[in-house]
Amino acid sequence: MPVKEILLLRHGHRLAWQLDPTTGKYTSSHRFPSGLPADPPLASHGVQQAVETGEHFADTLGDLVRQDRVRIYSSLFYRCLETLRPSMERLREIQQQHRTQGGLRDGVEDLKVRGELGIGEWFGRAWFKQPRPASPERLKNTWFPWVDDQYTSLVVPDEHGERIEALHDRVARALEAVVNDVDEEYARQGRADEQVTLLLCGHAAQIIASGRALTGVVPEDLDEDDFQCFTCGISRFVRRATTTTAGEDGTGDWRGGVGVAGGWDCVANSDCGHLQNGEERGWHFHGDESFDSYGPPKGEDIKVEDTGEVLVGKL
Image: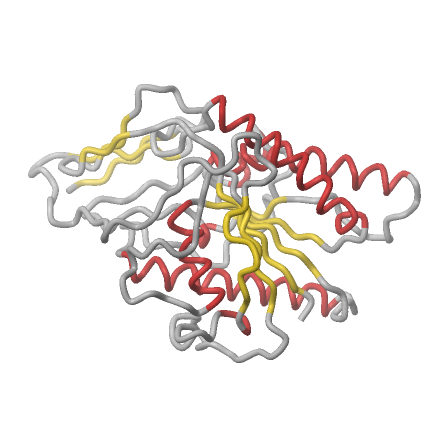
């Protein structure tokens, strides 16, 4: 079991958007790089949080990067990748310096971010199609050259969004799949005895659901304020020495304290000690989120912006 540690990072403070659930249209007063109103960049304060986070990871993950014992996954929404930008620049610089000094083992690729839709944003269940991020190819070629455009998401959310229970199961499936994928990657290389750290960058609801899926501890009231998710907060989970196995689809018996991929213990709950302003913009669930009771306006088309193009579907 190479994967020993998982770090969950919430994106930095972002710009805002609005949704009119009667039309299914997302809007914003800001211009967003991807052209998708539900895909905002960071606010200036969020950019500073990302820089501070990058310095922190350079200090704490630098040695692991030199040993090729770090794998990074992220939601593909712009704000998450923008949050990772300073970290990737610093960590790739460390890796390249180590490579030129002859310290990196042969065949090690440059550090990349694997875009996993399964750890993407939570959009409530709706009668309309919910937003999708830009493609890995566009993200890599236009803004983030370290995005792995050869990686294919292991889990894809329902295009019409999810209710809160389904979100937890989706995140559980994604975490189980990612951990197993990296375990198998290192086993194929004959490195199954090495300890690997996963860094996952995502969103508030997904991070809370991740904490519950990893530990298997799910409160009866899903609105309970248990796992924290401050902007650029870092949660740390360590794999348990004795493991049990969740259901094959990751949706069954991970609850009840079992946890996905053998179970994990939370040793840091959205720590913000690396940030100048500390804890900011915490969030927790406030009931389910769904828009399917509205229904479409009759006789109209709905336009959904996606990676710069407008897709039109007849209602």
